[in-house]
Image (cartoon, rainbow, N blue to C red; front, side):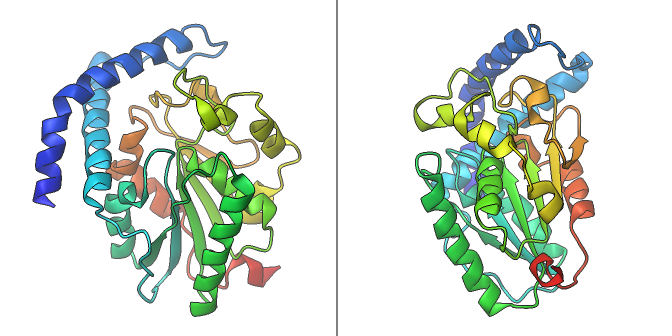
Length: 275
C-alpha cells in the first residue's frame, strides 16, 4: 500500500495540469447552463481541487497495482453484500478505500467490473446477473445492495430494469450522470452517455427502478465529469448533494462514506423476498 501512495505522489504533478483543464471545461459549460452551480469560496474550491487530484492519482495507481481482485468472493456477511460497479475507464480497484470502510461496518463486498458495457449493455447485464445469482445461492438470506460510481450507475439502472427480479435491496450511485453528460471527451461508445442519447432516453422513460429498488443518488456540483451539474439529478430517487467534492474524491471522501453508510439498509430479508 505504501508503494501505491508513493506512485500516486509521482503522478500528482501531471494530474494537476489534467484537472486544471477538466475544471476549465467545467467552468465554461456551467456558465452557459440554465441553472449553474453556485460558486464555492476560493479556499473550499482549492481544497476540493487538490483532493480531486490526489483521489484521481490513487484511483489510477490502484488499478495499476490491482489492489482489489475482480474475481474475489466475499467473506460471510454480517450485515449484507455490497455489489460494486466502477466508472468507465476504472476497475474494481477504484473502490479499495470504500471497500475497507464497508467491511469495517460488517458488509461483505463483491467487485463486479463489466468492461465494454456501453457497447453491449444487454450482454454486460446478463454477465453481471449471473454473478449476482451465484452470490445469492451462496448467501440466500443476505441483504444485497448495489453501489455504483459514475457511469457504473447507468449500467446499474440498465441492469435492474432488465432484471426486475434481481435480489437488490437498494441502489446507491455516486457521481452518476443520470441525465447524461456534456463532457467533450465522451467519444466512441461513451457517446451513449450524452443527454438525449437513446440509452439515456430509454432509461428515463417510465423508470421503475427508484420504486422497486429504493434508489439513492449522491452527487456534487463540484464534479467536473457530470455536466451540467443538474444532470446528476435522478428523478424518483432520494437525491443527496454534497458540495466541494470532485468526481474521484467521491470514492475517498470520509463525508461521502458516512452519507453512504447512513443509506445502507439494516440486515433484513432482501428486497426480492419481500415482494
